[in-house]
Image 1 (cartoon, rainbow, N blue to C red):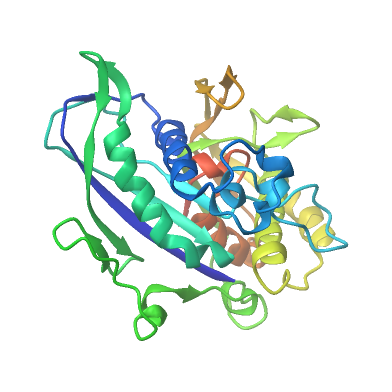
Image 2 (cartoon, rainbow, N blue to C red; image 1 turned 45 degrees about the vertical axis):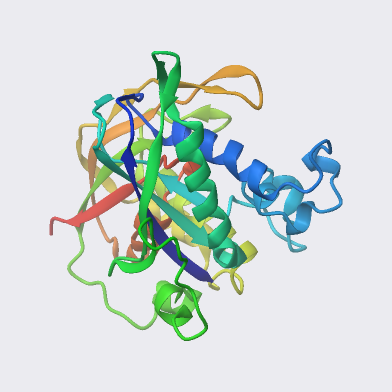
Length: 324
């Protein structure tokens, strides 16, 4: 599965007021700008548009209609091929000249469409973000785009060039193959009997059609398995061949030894649906203890790809710490 992350650093041209959680704000404006950039049939609904399967906007924002599922999968619709990780700050008021960074995670062929997102972010800066101040939203300049953790420069505002070529593509794009990402049989994970999960952005896990307020380990691992296998099946070469029901059953033996999880309620306004949507989720940390070895590769991948509902907005970002 082709995967990479791109860091978009912006510099504010005006003072800005942004919400506590900024994922929905940035994603909403990005969708508005991206549609302006790529839409060829302006008056056509995405669901019935003949171009939807090759449209960058539809693949990201109308995924269920644009990406056809391989036959035989146990999921109802394809996962979004992009996750937007907003700036990790609870700060709401920003001054002109301050910088913020959004990270975009790309899965599969959407990696080939990076230039559209760079141009969309450039246009976002002209549209503006956040609450209106003196009649307008805060404008910004896209200062730079870097790839991966090594900070390889893809774009800077100074030269206005996107540096992607055949010779540099291997540096910019990285492969996450199932066998390498989930080395169940090739690596030992002994010594991991106690692991703490820290929730960076609110975690929404649904069980029996209701959000989960308590998180026994088997519910967590079930959600992680669903997320990981869906990504591999739709954007990779298929899921790792593991006994998933047996893994979930084994997960029921893992105990919770410490729990500081809390429920955080927040809401966002969806301009597409013209209504407010409640998006509460778990925050805090929780410690699990038991024979965790077989689950660790799945958990490690979840740290990268997020877990739970509404991951496209950046929700469900988690980290694990070995406390053994």
